[in-house]
Amino acid sequence: MADNETERQKLAYFQEITGVKDTSLSHQILEAYGWDLDSAVHAMVDKNTNVIPEYEESMRVVADVRHPDVLLGDGGVETGVGLGSGSSSDGRGDVLALADVVDDRSLFGRIGDGEHRDEAAGEVQGADGTTFVWRVVTLPFLILRGSYNLIHGVFGLGVLLAGGLLSAGLGVLRLTGVPSLAVEAGTLPNAAPIFSVPSGATEASNFLRAYERRYGENHPEFQAVSFMEALRRAGQEFKFLFVYLHAPQHANTPAFCETTLQNEAVVDFINANFIAWGADIHKTEGYQMSNSLNASTFPFCAVILGSTDQRISVVRQAEGFRTAGELMSTLQAVIEEQSDSLIAGRQEQEARDLNCRLREEQDEAYRIGLEADQERERRERAEEDRAARDRYDADKKKAQDDKEAAQAAYILARKEENLAQLRRDKALNLGPEPEGGADVTYVAVRLPNGERKERRFINTTKVQALYDYIESLNSFKADSFLLISNFPRVDYGTDKLDLTLKDAGLHPRTSLFVQVQEP
Image (cartoon, rainbow, N blue to C red; front, side, top):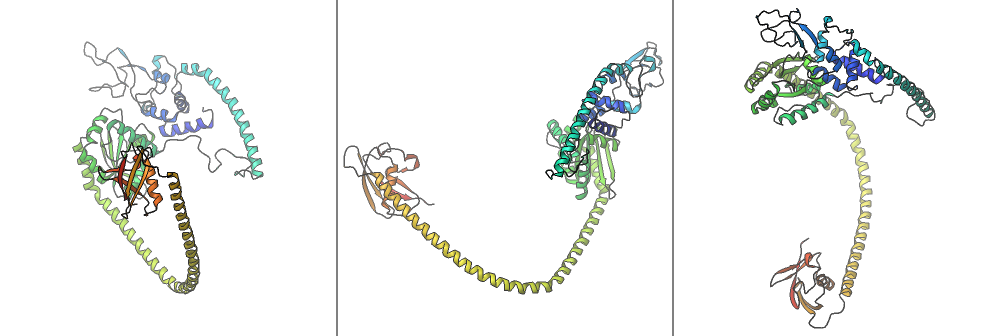
């Protein structure tokens, strides 16, 4: 049996979704996968997976081809037990040789069929499907595990009691949000579940990512939501639900996905007339849907219509490989034959919407009539209040405007003062004008107002000094300007401010003009 509450819950869920009634066998399967619920469920539906190696070995049978349970057909074994060549040299059907064979079905299928080892093989098997050797080998581990879980349980009980007492004390002192003396597992309203099972939306998203990694993005627009949510969307849009159950390991799956589901006409037709939803049959929801729809072979497609009593109606199924033309014909036939039900549903919904709108309009008219008298009274009172507020707002606005005007005048005066001080500082930083000489550059500048200014500078002076000189003159107002020479035309912009007059080609004499830059 399971050793703690987590394992018991996983065991119960595993039995519920797989249908395995044998608790001991379910326990062994979960143990073999480290109590990983997803892996164990996946193994139950994957015939290429050995769920429990020892159990898989116990499923090997020594079959006498003359045994009545083994019947040979034209090309194989109807019972699902694969036999080797069973023909004798004389061609008789009853062969005396024995063949050692292994069933290639999934463990879930074999458990469902109730198969067991032949008593003639000499193996002793319990009612739960395990061998006596397996039970003997695992006995020491079961004893050790039981001892560990006993100690772990005692320790956990002590921690639980201590936590309960501490929570009770804090609750009495109103220091915690749990006003209870004893907190049992699962009683807290916001308590998280012990373990989580992947949701349908998560599985749908994982399927879509895996499908696109394998076959690309050219496919019907599969909804990355649970089946019920996809069915709800189809109902809202008055469309059929196109269901595709994906069997990755089936021989026909690659060809179907690479040709039929990538056909442009098929993709466009499905996207225009259906809500598409897909699932992997090795996942929980895909496996459940394959059982619900009685899928017998793959690829499997179905067209589903939801009903008002929350039941689903399977309109059409397509099992096995279908070409693009065959699938297209099937879907077109569904639209032609069954579209009347969707049209009727849409008309009923439109009628309900119309009635709802009429009721809303009547209610609105009633509310308008009811509120008319009250509105007149409110309007009169509001008019009086508005006049009082207008007078108050006008006085307040005038005071605010006066204050803002005074602040603006003050700011402008300070700005002018700062600019004047900046010009004075720049004039002082220029220093005295040098006398003429070999290392002196003569600069003539024409201002925007037509005025001409001249000054001498040491040829090692930076171009930035010319800008400082122009700004210190205060001959024109501009937030930004540029010094330019005519012949040759050169712009002395920000990239040349750190050059000396000599390096900038302005020595020994130059003539510049000021070009005002638009803001």
